[in-house]
Length: 102
Image (cartoon, rainbow, N blue to C red):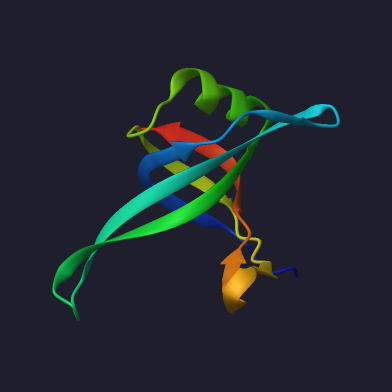
């Protein structure tokens, strides 16, 4: 039996990249902002997620959504870190399977 790798995020679009072609596919990178409450710090915090949308999902977001639109995304977590200057690391984006506008 294989393990389940499924994640659901909701939030507002914080940035939409340029649509680009990868072979016969279209790909779009999207930033998703998710606000929550940090009980320890007693303040509102915003978490940012990098999403990769492919083909029809990418076209839908590029053509019909804008920064600030509220969406729900179901996808797969693919966590690959890459080194960046000054010793920091950035994580690779989540792959979006479904995008629902609220």
